[in-house]
Image (cartoon, rainbow, N blue to C red):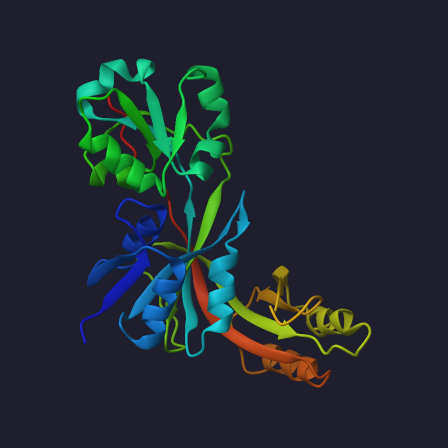
Length: 293
């Protein structure tokens, strides 16, 4: 079967940047929702899926985490962290008029991330929401007769033929999104072009309902083995009030001793443990921005 990579589309989104950095070959198919993307890889309609899982500013993408943990036979096989760089872009015919634009279009999160720039430089210009930054860029490209702008990334500007007139207009320079690659098999996916930052093993732990101090004991199983946890988060199991599971990221590749023994100890406490994947993670450089003059 031809290798197909599914992602949260359309073209020009930050997810597409993550896809292009990990896959230089194969068909790339955009999906309108994260659940559709996850279901497609679970059923074998696509080979890999790339979805956003966490953002520095907005936190965990809850719908991605919930569907990931509820869907059987899929695994996290790689991760790429992409800097979120927002730029102001216009149709090439309107480059000289960008300071007099009538409307700015983008996703609500992108508009919020650029609040300071908009307040200082375009305070009287209304900002209208669209379903994605890519959709905003596409709309601007289709209406050259209107002096309007979009907020989006460099790929959106390239995909839809727009000119970036102000780059890096976001409020926070340390804004990043964590994208994970999903596959039916456990085999990790590596990259020869991205900067590898380490390995992670991601698990979920469900605590017994009648064991006081169970979470403390779970964390102790990692602590005395010197296993560093970079993330621990609770999510509702959707089975009733007060029922939660915990997502845990371990900063170590799944080995044959430490992590399996920690999991065995946790399971001896009547906890349920599921391994979502053990995988390398990479940092995207975020380069590729050219300012229109």
